Structures are given as structure tokens and as C-alpha cells.
Image (cartoon, rainbow, N blue to C red; front, side, top):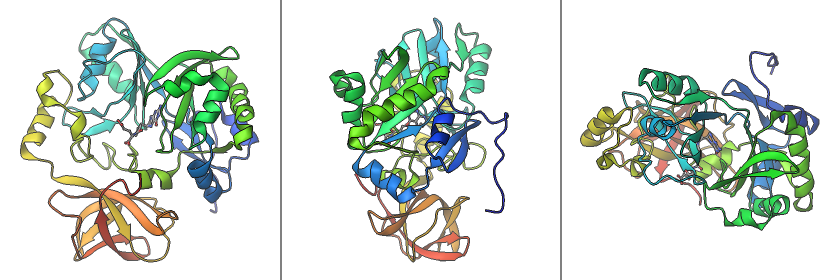
Length: 372
Ligand code: THG
């Protein structure tokens, strides 16, 4: 590209920034007002390592919004349609958040450290401001802050070998999204069985930003026997696996979508009687039935090279939906994408195409995920 992206103080750097630069990071993106590594110069090798080995990722951009005080769980429940009854400390959950009209505004992981201290590990939108406003306007007894917490992900089929070498065999017993507070060489951590890939692994939530390089080096050393290497959340793997990317797949301001359209319906029990923001809107949408559904898309033709903007999904040349992100999957030997189509359009629909910058590609629909 004939330009570079300026690194200045208005966009925040991660505690792992220096370590990733030392390890050869080659691109950054911006997420939650912070830089996030994109790749380390070998995208194919980094994908292969995630699929067959173990990778370490700076995901400090997954910021924590902390709810602390007697009303922490009350506020958490107000923020998500998912019923939080039965939530217990140490067991995380994936919790879509909606605005009053039922539009998704984020899809964080909830980590209840205790009944009075809860983290929301957020995707790319300003949940902290939203939660602060809701808490104050509702007169709740809860402090909303962004603590000094920065996740580092270890992902891949060999990730648990590295996690065990680092932390001990107890990590293997963690169920999906379960977590524990611990220390590693005196570095305060929360360790969770989670991560934005379907290849398995853990996330180490660093609780002291001054020790980022130290933790990075410690993980590198422990992972050396399994040839661990630096990487980043991988868009090709996430498309294959059907993981949702808030900001790419939907965003309140630019690509509004409701939880039923995005496939979160099974998480939302409207009969549980709990109060939450967006309930009236979701009851209406549930009664009417959602207008759109999330789909996988195959695109014909030569390998595509991603997309900068959402793309148009057409039927017989008429716009019927959108495709939010595309990539070439080497595993499938095909171009794939995800998007939203009319709810009544079956996977066997014909006459479909996707509008790329350089012309239209014939397309067909398929169920998600592409691969398990
Ligand atoms: N880890 C942590 N924080 C995060 C993410 C993460 N914050 C931002 C973003 N990712 C939040 N969004 C997601 C989206 C998908 C998943 C996790 C967080 C995910 N989904 C699985 C799936 O869809 O198959 C499992 C969902 C479920 O079983 O409930 O893992 O990755 N700390």
C-alpha cells in the first residue's frame, strides 16, 4: 500500500506490543481503540500452525469491563437477554448484548469472578460506556471500570500441552469457558478454557500490564518443545468454524442484526421472566419470526483475497442480503463467506451471486459451520 498507518497515542498499545514487535509482527488492525497484531509475515504458515500445532496471540484488545459491587449480577443480567440464573463463579458464558430495540451491540464472554465482581470480555464496541450509563440511570450499586487486564491466547491442537507445561495438569480439567485465578512466576493471571478459534486452548488474562513481555517470553519458552509461534485471531479459521465477529458480521451503527438472526436464539429463554434491556423488542421479534438468517456462502471462481467492506448478496441480480466476510479456504479448496439472507431462502436457492469489487461471482448457500 502507498501509505502506512500512524502509531500514535490516541490508539492504545497492548502490554504485549513490544514483544510482538520483537517477534516480527508485520501488520496491525484496530479493535477497541487498541492495536491488535494481524500477521507475522507468513499467513499460510500461521494458519497451518493454528490447525496442526500451537500459536500464541496478543488479544489484549479483548478488554474487560468490570462490574463490581452488590448489584454486579443485577447489572450483568440487565445487559444480556441470556438468562444468568445458575451462573456460578469460575464458569464463564457467552452473552450477547442488545440495545433497547433488540439490536446486538456486542457479544462478550462473561466471567463471574464472584457474585460481586464480574468481567465482560468484550468485542469491538464501547460496552464500558453503555454499562456505566445503564448502571447510573437505574440507580444500581455497582462500579463499572476497565481494569488492567489483557488476554493472551494459546490456541491449536497442541495448546493444552503448552498450558499444562506452564500451569500444571489442573488446566486440562477446565470445561469450556471455565476459568481460575492463579499466578505464574508471581505474575497474576486468570486462566480460562476459551479462545476465538475452534482448535482449542486457553486464554491467559494478564492482570499486571507491566509484565506483558515477561509473560510473552514465559509462554514462548514453555511452548518451544511444541514449536509454538506468534499469530493472531485467524479470519479464515473463524469463517470455516462459523465463529461470529462483531464489527465484521454485524455492528449496531452499520450492519444492525438481532440475536435471532445471528443464531443466538437457543441462548435466549424469554419464558424465564428475567428483566433485561431489549426484552420488549425481542418478544416482538420472536413472535413475528426473524426476517433474516445467518448463512454460509460458497463463491465460485479463483481464490478471493478477503474484502474491505460488506458485500451484496444478489438473487437474479436483485439485492437480497449481504455477505460480511469472505476468504479462500485451502482446507475446503473453495472460497467461503458468511452473511445474512432472507429467512425463507433455503440452502438450495439458485440464481445467487455476490458482488465483489471486480465483478460478480456466482454463489450458493450452505449450513454453518463449514467445518467442525
Ligand atoms: N475470548 C475472550 N474475549 C473475547 C473473545 C474471545 N472478546 C471478544 C470476542 N472474542 C467475543 N466474541 C466471541 C465470539 C465467539 C466465541 C467467543 C467469543 C466462541 N464461540 C463458540 C462458537 O460459536 O462455537 C462457542 C459458543 C458457546 O458455546 O457458547 O467461542 O474469544 N476472552
